[in-house]
Image (tube, rainbow, N blue to C red; front, side, top):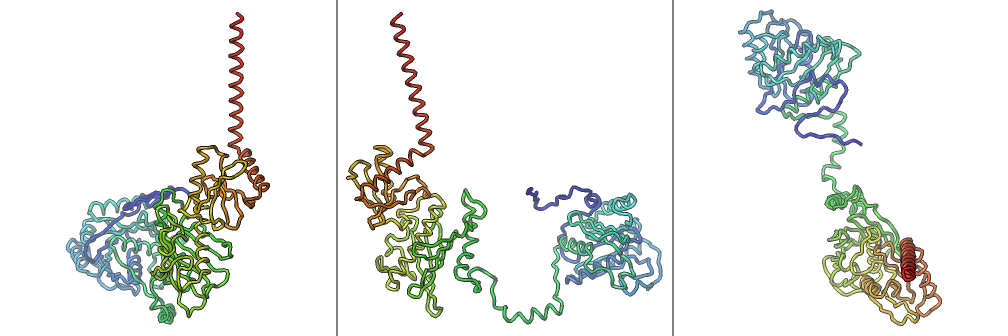
Length: 556
């Protein structure tokens, strides 16, 4: 999708096809000062100036803007302010500068918020006098033959030159058409419009479309230029519906996720973090659109508890209620690595008559969930006791279930983000880790409580003694161990899942042999082997050549 060009504070033409508004339209105007806003309606005779003014008056009234029409053509026998048929109400008079000054004075003395005055149809000094009180002008001219008719365009240019000469900004230009195949339109980009059917009888009969696009557009263009405020009432039927509904909604606050009582607690927790997560994620160097949602990961723990989480929220549903509690929901806040560091949870009771309670856990990035719970877990802002029976109000089963759900989330984040998380592993399958020396007797074995410590020692030993010199295993605490392949990414761990007993040499030899075959089948190892053998071949050939050449030299 092509990117649009956005310019603040100025107008920019978008359409590249023929656009008469760019040539014939008005000016972008901003008017400062106190009301009233005085607008002179100019243009040649028989353009529909009087009807246009009445339509504008009706539309301004509809939007609650006080407006006044000023009949400035005092030489005409009809008063445009009489909507009852534009009937003859006065004697015809000849134009003189004095009469023009009188009309201009009436225009000046009007004090509604918007004052519309009609000018005469010929350009002269009389027209100039009438235009002097105006803040802006609107030009309307008949053009039944279309925007590109040359006579029409000449008339528009002539009147535009006039308003430029008398220093009256031309806000809007309108083509008036009686062609039934034309459509009313307004182009706010160029302040140019077409109004179809400005007929006095049609206006008197009330059949002109009150939502005419050109009239609507002109009113809003005037409102924008003078910073007007538009209002509109409801229809009577609409008002009756809303009045009946009002008592039930009058005390409802502006919607926020936190007060959305129609949503489940977990959904409120998710939504309350979504916007915050968006702004936090945007500050990351590697942000991509949608990171704040990040899949709303779901899964089941080993005990069957259902876990859902996203960037900032956590929810789990126990496989079976524990002490009457059936679910946990809350928020997490990222630390230096943008992974969960502070976790705030609420434990929900299945019976609404029972109080829920809150758990807060800190320093998760450094220590994980389970280490030193007595100092880092707080129940309703009160830390007490020592693990595993950390809280007097919680059974071991409830504590362990919550730990299992949180560790599942942290382990899943490790897998997704490809990072190592904190000092403890989040794979609850292993109780401790072992490094074995890879020799015939396997007599040298080192056990570690934390996976990171085991990996650090393992890497140190293979760096010193060679890649196949030591093996790394995870131990489930029940006699079963699993060989781990260190690839420095969470996905590469637990590559071998066959369990064996430490004392069973036959099974152990099979596992070690599988590991060696895995290395030999690795493409990088095969490339290394190929190029190493190729290099040795070249070296051997070179040595043979040098040896042969040396023998030949001796014979000579």
